[in-house]
Image 1 (tube, rainbow, N blue to C red):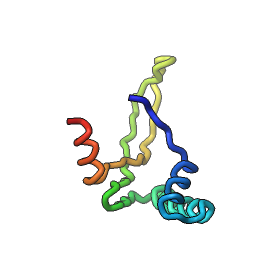
Image 2: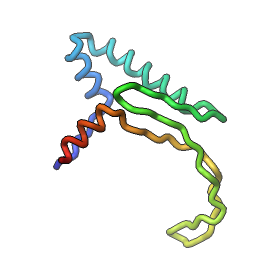
Image 3: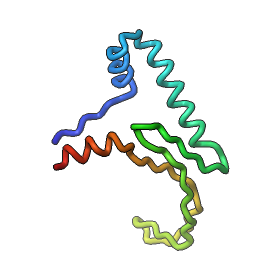
Image 4: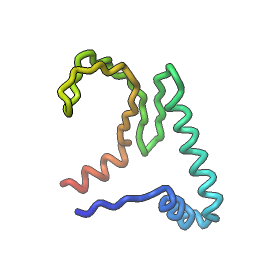
Length: 103
């Protein structure tokens, strides 16, 4: 199976055709949505959760510090501070479609 990469521009074109709307208008709306999601996720000292029904959930989760991590290149022991990471959990509808493809 071949991997296909879609860019933001590809998505804007698809939505523009689907809704029969000017692609410039779709681009403004799409970029605004992505910017808003990014702002919510990147809020400092805050663990957020964005739930988009039938698509999925983006959740910011904390990671623990790793006081004795090892640099694999130099084998040097280093300290990795705690941080936050974004986890995506696929929505129910998409999961059902993907599971159907597997069987």
